[in-house]
Length: 280
Image (cartoon, rainbow, N blue to C red):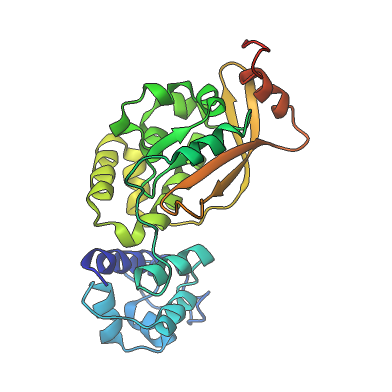
């Protein structure tokens, strides 16, 4: 494992260990505990490894845990599926995040998102820089074109742009979700200069981000309904989807479609009228 992955794995294991209720792990109640959660020796015992070896793992030493050991630690620390996948990737037992796209947005991908009509869509790199969008997304978030390219990063905008904060239906919950998904994606690449610089800027700019980042929480993306509060058309209920082009694996396409049974489709049509119909 590279040093950055070892440090991240160490910090992540400490944070999960402190969140486990000893009783839930099958340990007897009682006994004074200076810190919450499990002790290192308890994690080692329950996972079938030596106390010394597990201590080295939490210290970020250059050791290489097997997949079986990582799986045992995930069970002991009661990790969610997303957390389990995250530690596997950190330990080198899962698929790595794709490298960033370095040549911008391919023309055929731009044509694809343009063809989605009233469904807002945009493309991001592996570090969440926004590199393309369609007209519907620009009507949903009018400021995207005006943002300097260096700041046109989804995570940066979520935590620093007041317009995005007003647009998100529940900013506190939504921003936390973005943060945990971002960390899950870039965990094995935390030493990359672009990631380091972005995290440092966000920690300086946003106390909310700083607190969330220190928690080491991760979560995987799942399609689902999101609520937006648009200044022109009001509440929009959109299903959030994420796709990766087979021939551009360093990109992710984010597409919003109108939630079934809502008035959102009509509202999106008003935001992005068909050619010749006029804009409102």
